[in-house]
Structures are given as C-alpha cells and as structure tokens.
Length: 98
Image (cartoon, rainbow, N blue to C red; front, side):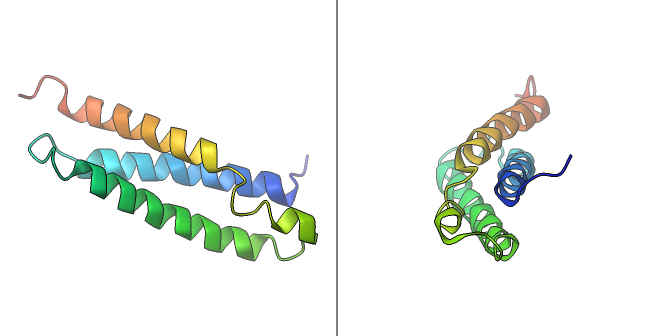
C-alpha cells in the first residue's frame, strides 16, 4: 500500500508532534512554571516550521489546488499529539517528586 503525498505529510506532522511533545516534556520542570507557556509555544512553532519546510519539499509534484493544503494538512494531529505526549512525559517524570 502506497500513501499519497498529502497522507505522507499528515503522518510526518503527527510524528513530529510526538517528538516535539516528548522533547517539551523533558525540557519543562516544575520549578519554572511561569516560563512554560512561551517555551511550549516557541518550540512547537519551531517544529511546525520544520514540518512546513519538509512538506514544501515533499509536495513539489502536487497539483496547485493540493499545494494550498500543505500548510494546514495535519495541523490538528500535530497540536494534539504534542500536547498529549508533553503531558505524558512530564507526568511520568515528575509524579510524586515534590
């Protein structure tokens, strides 16, 4: 079974969301609660920009109407997997260590 280009972009963004969530879970610590939101935003934005650049290179052979979908295809799995894995990693590391 072969995936289409937009499906590959979707899966790549979901995978990058998982990686970004794990990295954020490792970076954040309980002693720095006030600086957590900007860190989450900028690291997430950095990974999304990386995914956009890779998606642009992957989508060179797409039709023009499908090229418009490159920037938004897979954004929801990216965001929700980032949040889920960040919370899971953070909880796994810091539960009961206060």
